[in-house]
Structure formats: structure tokens, C-alpha cells
Length: 160
Image (cartoon, rainbow, N blue to C red; front, side, top):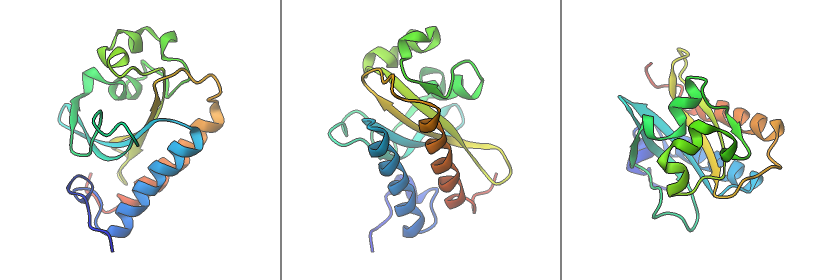
């Protein structure tokens, strides 16, 4: 039986939950042809990466790393200032103004919140590619929402 990673063991009670969360990330990333996928948890003013799927880009993002919420897309999406589906980030001024957009670079982004049982936001389920992806549609967003709900069900034992 695989062991829990320290980052994911903080939010997933057992190896079955851990495996299901990782499988959801990898399945959606591969299905959509995205380069990076992650589950973040909001802690104070930071996004902590709990699970990551980024083959070949592990130096860029790893479990347990964190970033200031003001410096990434998550808070802007939660606040309604950026859409959850951005096939081309260059079409959104807030996105282009964030240093991370050029640093990685991020050409397309798809992200939905993960909610706790009490309705509060746990974090985000995110997918990105370094290139714009005009082929990303509402169907892709629906797939991410569905998997986000599956991930949330694996976090169901968490307090709000």
C-alpha cells in the first residue's frame, strides 16, 4: 500500500483518499492535455499545494510549497475578478499583471474551488498550460467541477 505524502496526509485521512485525489488530478490533467495540475489548501493568506501532477516540471511546483494568494490566480477567481476558465490568459488584464503569468509562463488556466462540507472554501483544483488553449470550453470546466466535487468528498472529514 502506498504511503501518504506529508503534504496530502495533512488533508487526506488514508491512502485510498490520497490515491483518489492524485488520480483525479492526473486524469483531468491528461484528459485536458494540461501541463500542471494541483490541489491547493488556503491557509491564512497562502495557497499550500497539497497534491501536484506536473510531469517534467517538478522543479516548478511541488507538494508542501506555498504561495501568497495575492500572487496567484486563486483569490482573484474566488473574488470573481477572473473567470474559472481562461483558454488564453493574455485576454485578462489581472492575469497578465500577475508576475507568475510571465514567470512560468501561464498561457491557459482552469480552476474551481473545492468546498468543505460546511460550504467554506478549502482551496482550489487547478490546471494550467504554458500555451494558450483555445480548444478549452465549458465542457472542460464541467469536467474539472465534477472532479473537484469528487476530491471534496475525499476531504469530507475535515472540520470547516
